[in-house]
Length: 430
Image 1 (cartoon, rainbow, N blue to C red):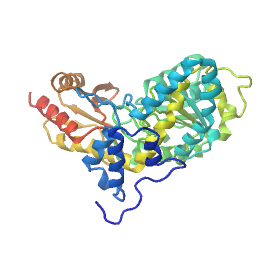
Image 2 (cartoon, helix red, strand yellow; image 1 turned 135 degrees about the horizontal axis):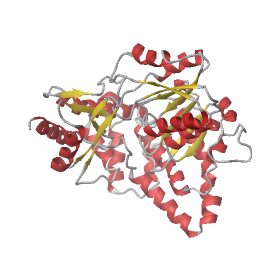
Image 3 (cartoon, helix red, strand yellow; image 1 turned 180 degrees about the horizontal axis):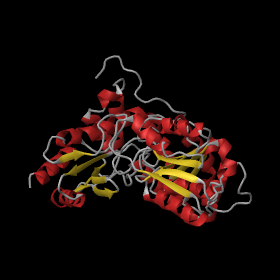
Image 4 (cartoon, rainbow, N blue to C red; image 1 turned 90 degrees about the vertical axis):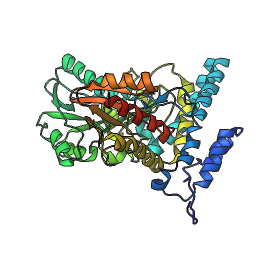
């Protein structure tokens, strides 16, 4: 540990480790985490990424299964104990008198929550809508864009299926033209990735859809560079941030996106069924909301929240997830996640017939890793790891990506990953 230590927890508004943990009756795991945070003061994010003792106490903040190693956090992440407890508490409160406590108490917390999400995203609170997931946010934009027959939209075959299907529905219904690009990944060639989009732009292109981090293999795309090229040509930019928000350190406006959506139950560790939509302020007026409001073309971000009765107990527990994220710190979290991905991939990359489908470079990949085994189907390795080692991963067969996706999280230990490596090694040697 460093002798000249600075504060490990950077205050973000009212957030701090002490305030966060003091709000509970300090069970053993909480006291241990508090002590670990104090011991870690002054340690650089790079150094802390490899401190297993520290991350062991982070693990204790989760209710992880002792009989299963969950390495499919790319689908949906578990929430830490504090978030689970808050959601249960709010749910119980709601059921004491739903119409009173939901509408007159919990719903009053939406504006403070909006401000806290905006602070985390680095944007104006009037640009943030709270919803259920990134698919809902992105489809609000996709179906709300005022496109007409013949207008072109550029997107990639490796984008998320819900988005692909949404654009196909607009193509069928409204006569827009989809232009699909096919990305060869993994890639560390920024010019190649940018030019794949640019070459598809024409005078008729109105929108480009960019997935910030490809969910299949963890490829990070140079969104800002692609967005700059699009805006030069008057093209609007829609960014799928389902896997990037709270995963690695960036601010949404830095991407130069017009629209951005994220699932908060992935890397922010909010309750399952929580999401966020960002719309650049000057764009709000022209987007139709998914659900009808009194004036669909008003310039109020809240028009995208016209869902009717909603699970307020889930929404308000997002606040605890923000506190937990701030307690760890964005940079420290990013460094740890990247370290975990590289830890296991570096141990298996020299095995015969193994192909890495994800970059080891921090600019092009973070937590999500994908490997293929020559001559074997992804499902075979996925099943082998579960049956023989109780390691939960997911086999991916999508366009030109074939492999097993492995996604550790902050509660994952290197001992967990050693079991994964043992399993992959045994499978290859069969």
